[in-house]
Length: 370
Image 1 (cartoon, rainbow, N blue to C red):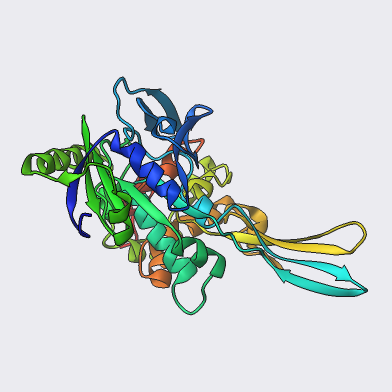
Image 2 (image 1 turned 120 degrees about the horizontal axis):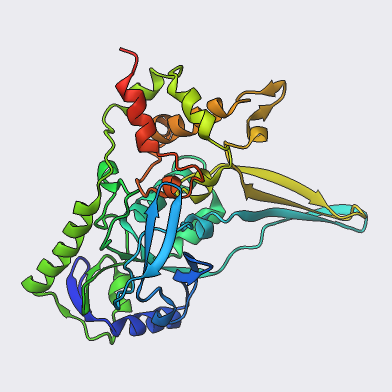
């Protein structure tokens, strides 16, 4: 089998063998597929489940699927769903309780024993998983439910072949070429894949795939795919001074201007691959004999999220938008040593009114406090 860090070529039909090998190894495959006019992440079994021949058109507040007219499996940009929905589910049971013989018995949440293989993880999304690793599995306080899912994960990443007008991964240094912790990373060319082997598990999954060492010509083709995607990234964001810029301009008039457009719908936080705000809900049956505690996704744009004893600390849309953007690009760095943004552009595409974070930051920069 190929060594870790080896680069090999695979015929496109080898993707079926990879899927079969993953299935035999006990993995549940999750990857992109077309449903309801979008490319979403769901369980898949065969390469035919992938969005073969489909691509998308994105812009501020705009998303459309269209036929790509060719036989590419991964010729699309990030869709509305991110991988956090599997590592940090929207609804997670934490514990339950039942009254037995007049006394309460508490039970921790059942372990999720599923082993996931993520198919088609992009460079920015791989960085987003790394950021969530710091949030949920780094430091002194760890989420055991997240850590258990993450430990069993297999990542098959894919280098981008195109960039959407909303992408700014190059500014965030997160793409478009895959880097970081992956098991396999594929670059799709017209007639084959160039694969980077990132782990022992990735090497083993290539069994019976008719792989060959990548030639100089193969590597040149793969490099051309990534270079083309990088050249298509038009949106730019200067990041070197962001924490100071935002902290020094908390009273900038631009916050009022963007608040007049913002709907406080929370779409940006739902589609963001790194946002992790949550709340805890307790429920019980009508007889008072069973109870359950669950964690559910929440958003800092929801007014009740900022309600504490004595009042609401962010009662206006202006305050909530400022909190979200300042946390994402400034205070997140102080908390976790990295920006909370990976430049995927989802928040721009899926904002109903097309608010663009790069434009908002640039507007503050143009009239910043000296």
